[in-house]
Length: 227
Image (cartoon, rainbow, N blue to C red; front, side, top):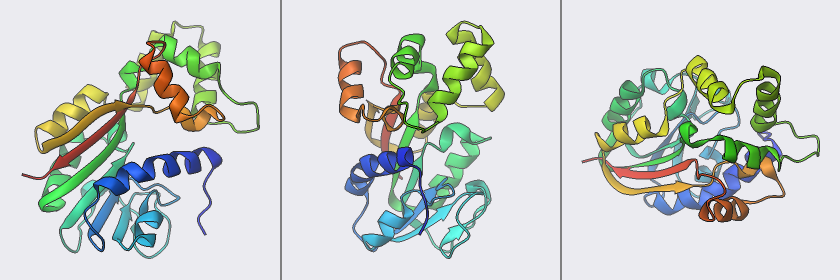
């Protein structure tokens, strides 16, 4: 059994209905880009009858997982669907990764993307999330950024831009433009992103705060189809 953190469990359980709703019928062949060390959505897809594999340098050392970058992965056959969850903003070469995704998909194959627009993570959104971090022993990425920002003494935007540049992150606008250049867009919408680390605050609380204009919705949900 693969262990996941409580935050990751909240993330996967909340996002799984979105992924499942846009998958072709089982037993379609599905590839997850950047499944991570816990396997991402691959276990859930297999439980629902999909022929699912995960590709990630840190993928579990188990059958059906490939420990490599997706750009270097050679699939045995075309994929009926590809899932990429918060992996594209980290890739070194975004264009190459999406060219490979387009080549790996079967005709009319579906691309399911869950992403992050880091450029929308403004100071108001950051402060809102930092004020809701739980004191229950969990120490996630938002805790980390709160500590580093306060220690830096920098304005939030300076801190965020410096961090993103150091990490080589692609912003949400660039990701969406690259997707639209290669796929027919079926769905593109903003969505909550911070909620897993804000327990007991929920995705509903985050969505409501964005609707009221208190914060920005930093998540991206994208569904594309190979032409």
